[in-house]
Structure formats: C-alpha cells, structure tokens
Image (tube, rainbow, N blue to C red; front, side, top):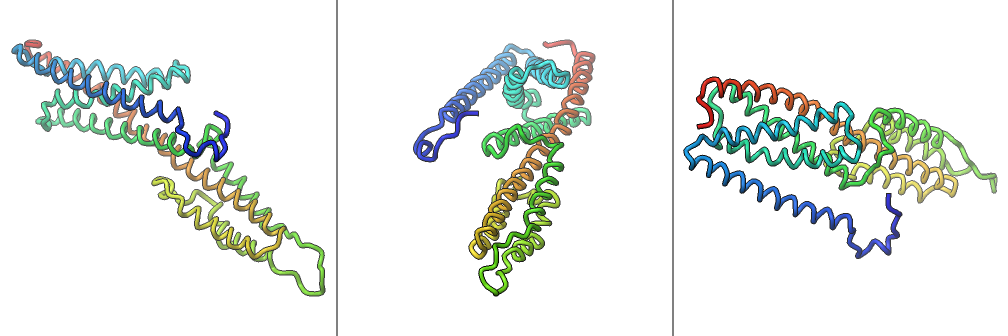
Amino acid sequence: MAGVHTLKGAIGRRDPNSARGHFRTIVQALLFGSISAMLFWLVAAYGNALRDPRYLDGWVLAGGMGVQLYFHVATATGRLTPKAAARWRSLHIFFGLLLVPVFLLHSNFSLPDTNFEWALWIAFVLICLSGLFGIYISWSLKSRHMFGDDIVLDRIPEERAKLAREVQAIAARIDQAPAASALPPPPHDAWIRELYASRLIGFFSKRRNAFSHLIGSKRPLKQLTDEIDHLTGFVDKRGQEKLRAIRRLVIEKDRLDAANVALGLSRAWLLVHVPVTYSIVILAVVHILVVYSFSSGAY
C-alpha cells in the first residue's frame, strides 16, 4: 500500500494511478473499436469474395472461446502466478468483449431458428451477462476501497462474533466515578445498556443492510452512528469513551457486512459463468461437427 496522505496534500491533487487508469481505459476502448471495425470489414470482404462469411467469423469465435477456456483451466489448476493471473484476467475480459460483435456477426444479427441454435444463443447470452456482472463487481470493489486483503469471506462470521462479544463487554461494563455528593449518579451506563439492547444486539447478531451495501448506501450506518453521537453529548467522560469504542466497533461491523455482500457476490456469479462456459464449449464442438457434416466446406 502507498503511504497515507494528509488531507491537505490530497486536496486538489490528481491521483496518478487514477490518471493512468483513465488513459488505459481510453486506449482499450479505442483498441476494441478498431478491432471490431476490422472484423466487420473482414467478414464483409470474405462475403464479397463469394464465400460464406459464417465460416470465417465462426472460426474466429471458436478461437476466442478457446482462449477464454484456457484462462478458466489455468486458473482452476493454479498454474498462474498472481501477477500472471491479473494480466490474463485483463485479457480474458478484453477478448470476452470482443467476442460479442463476432457472435452478432456469426448470428447475422438475428434470432435462432432451431432448438440447438437457441441453446447456443442462450448460453452465450448467459456468459455475457454473468461476465458483465463480474466486471461490475470487480470494478465496484476497486473503486470503493472499503476493505483489503485482510478480510476473508469464510472468516467473516468468526470476526463478526468477536466484535459482538467486544461490544457486549463494553456495554455491560459499569464505570462510575467516585460519588462527589450524596445524590445518586446519573444513569449513564443504563442509557448505554439500553442503546445496546434496543439497537446493537440485533445489529451485531448477523449480517445487516445487505441491499444498502449492494447499492453502496451508507444511510443505515449513519443513522446508527448518529444515535451514538447523540447519546455521547449526554454522558460523562467515561461514558463518552465507551461510546467512542462502541462506535468504532459499529463501523468495523458495517465494513464486514459490506465485505460479506461483495465477496459473496464475487464468488456466486462464478457459479453461473464457469459452468455455462464449459457447456457452450461442448455445444460449439457439436455445432462445428454438424456444420461440416452437412456442408461442402467454406465455399
């Protein structure tokens, strides 16, 4: 991680990594458009030469699917280093997007006619939609910077339970200053225990506000921290220290919930994307065999 910048230094300063990212995105978009235009031109030229263009874009589509399949196999077998896997993931996304115009060319921008063609069409659409969803999840995780590699999905319930025990111990602790008079002390600890019983037990018991985390809303967290901040103005110094500790735990619990939603989605979308990828490869092989069994070749 880079060093932590002060607020004064961060104001008015453009992040060089962000600038490089924007430049890379522009270059990739231009490259994508150029290659797509070239593919359209090649298919048109192939058709003008009195050949069936579906053989050309069909084999381009098959080759691109082979590259995509290699990424899945290499990732599943662990043959890629983390740096190589990151490069391959970028190529995987780029080639996957390029296959969309190739597929449209191959299908002649029309809907299928037979049941087998419908199976291929639906499988490809599912791959595209799940892939786009995976791109969005990856972009969302990077853009929000809500958590790092210290949070592991399978350990989140354990970390949540640990935070719940800590906040329970803080709320149950009674810290009273020595009595300065014969009057009974203010019920500051009782107020904190009431806040814990009414708002914090349920919050720490399980994952909360999944939909808000899905859309990136901090409103539920702000409502809860505002209640804590409001009570802070009515308690003594010891109570304020307890509430500040509780507030930190609430924010950490909210961070765990956000990670739970994001990491869960990043794992769940693969349950659609990967099986459909292997199924369309099988369907594509059958499709090639059928085409060449009932045709005279590429002319």
